Amino acid sequence: MLSTTKPLVTISIPTFNSGKTLQLCLEAIKNQTYKNIHISIIDGASKDKAIEVAKKFGIKDIKICRGSLLEARYMGVKNAKGKYTLMLDGDQILNHDSIKNAVDVSENQKIDMLAFEETLYNTSNFLEKLFNSDRTLINAINDLSPFTGVIMPRFFNTSLLKKAYSNIPKDIFKNTGGPDHAIVYYEAWLLSKKIEILPNAVKHIEPNSLPTLFKKFYRWGFTSIDAHTGKYHELMSRKERFRTGLFTKGLILESFGSILLLILKGVPFKIGFFTAAVQKSINKLDN
Image (cartoon, rainbow, N blue to C red; front, side, top):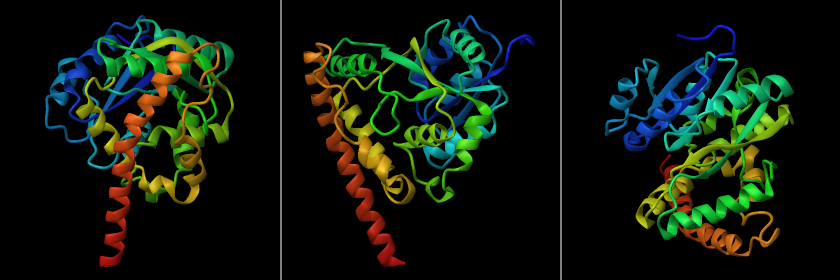
């Protein structure tokens, strides 16, 4: 039964063939100490059991989006019923009191955006250890700049989030996936600088094999082409660099791990980006 004394929080989750991780994601939401939650699933026509998993948890607000990740997130925001909206991914596992803490900070400090500090869900193999090194560096530096930082808010005042989305050019909605979160944060940051970081809030299930990593970041590169022109050109060019704060605060090994990881991610990203650029050029010639 939903509480009427605390603000409603909408948790919007885009899914695509993420049934395996979605199970863990939804279990963590179910176990939250904060209970006034509305869950919205925006599924990209999954071929696995993602929708079945959502229904097993009693989620009725399930919509299908055959467009981009940016468009799927937009559907979730338009559908948000809560005072606050958490843009969560299906491979993220909330700590049990994250929503309670986020609401408390937002209400008491009048914060418009909260970044959820991430740690790794698994660190059992070499690739996961590289992700862990990178995340350790990110969390130590705490760079909240939308241009140079990696930390981005996930918990928003819904009214601000809707205003931010209204300022995103509609012509990039169709194909933009990889940089969707960076674009949303940039637009929200232009409207408000009231942002904080919620410590120890979420664990992230990252790729644990090179084929999985290649597939993910090839897709990110392929779906970033439209964001590199026009309004977001400077944002994209400044973000696609090595982390700020490398080799500071005694984080030597973590810095080397971050550099190696960004190289491993950068190769499929660039292949995906240039593949999309070539296809776009061919389509222009055909038209």
